[in-house]
Structure formats: structure tokens, C-alpha cells
Image (cartoon, rainbow, N blue to C red; front, side, top):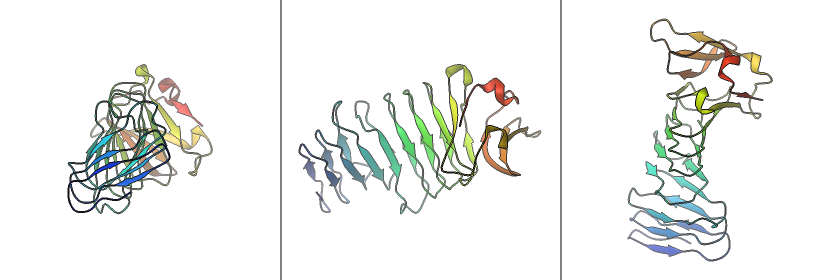
Length: 206
């Protein structure tokens, strides 16, 4: 279901809908199925309530989920052409970057942040968050990792990691940042200071 260049109102049905509003400031309502939303304007509004299926937004503009919007997956569009700021809400969100340098902000829920191949900034926010690391991703910065809040790293099984011990943690003497490296290349930077002992973080999942 597609809109045009104006401000459109699109409402899905009981099934799995695809809603693309177009270039105007659109209102998109998915309904009960597993719905796909395409966001192209900062003024787009998505209405999705609890029990409305497992839904996905792909956006080519900076986007923040509304406070009561239950959308599980928030993606930066691959063709955006520049880095985006994607922000979740108080629910549990999965937020994905693209090939650009994106900023992914989890919000207050139990969020999963997956940087793309660009050099991304990952901000979990409140809650117990998962930061997905891939050996093939960019040089990501994690701003608020906190093992006391049960934040965790996940080594992406689709990447080249085969064991936790393949990662090294080093202290950047000029900034007190923690550099996580794999085979000599930096895969993530954590704002320091923090413990250098990986086992102390209690945060690694294979």
C-alpha cells in the first residue's frame, strides 16, 4: 500500500501489510499482522499497538519511535546515502545500522543494537542491552556499556569470530578508552575507564 507526494493516511488490515507513505508527512497504521513500514519523511507517524504482530520499520531519515509504538525492528535504509540517528523507546527494540556511520540509541528498554559496516555510535540507554559485534563491521563506539546493568556483547555467529579469546582488550593511553581488537584490527571502542579483564565484564556470549 503506497501513498503519493502528499500527506497520506494508510491503514492496513488483519494480514501482513507493507505501508509506504511516500514523500509527504504520512500516518501509517499497520493492524494486527506482521507489518513493514517504509519511512521517508521526518513527519511520518506510525501507529502500532501491543499485540499487533512482529513489525519492521526501514527509514531513510532520522527516526525516533513514538513512546507507545510497538515495533520490534528498526532499520537504517541501505540507500539513505548518509548516516542516520535511530532511537528506540521504552519497549525492547532491535535497531540496525547500514553501510554508513549511524547513531543507534536504544532507549529505556532491553534493546539490541547492531551496527552495520560503517563506523557507528551505539548507545544502549537504560535497561539491559545487547551490543552485537562482528569482525566484518566498522569501527564502532559503545558509549555506555555497563556490566552492572547486565549489558552484554554478542559475537555475531555470521561473522568470523569462533571464540571469545579471539578478541583482545587494550587501553588507549591517550583517552582511557577500551579498544576491542580482532587480528590486529579494532572492531569496537568503549568509552573508558573500564576493566581490562574480559571475564570481569561477564558479558560475552558465543
